[in-house]
Image (tube, rainbow, N blue to C red; front, side):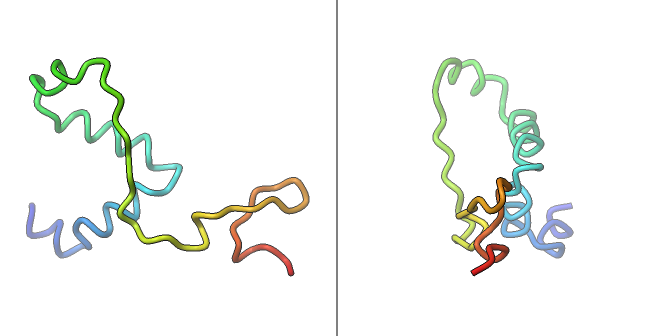
Length: 77
C-alpha cells in the first residue's frame, strides 16, 4: 500500500489535494482517524496551526471581479 501511495504521487500529491478547499475537511477527517486515541485526549482544547507546504501559486491570492472570487490567473487586465 505504501509503495502504491508513492507511485501515485505520495506526499506531494496528497498535500496538493488537501490544499483544495473542497478537500480540506476530508483531509482533517482522515487525519483525526489516523491519530492515536491517546494523542487526541492529550490535545483536547489545543489549537493547531496549519501551515501548508504546498508552494505559493496564483491560486493562493484570489481577487474579486464582478462580485465573484477569481484567481489572479483569471483576472482580466
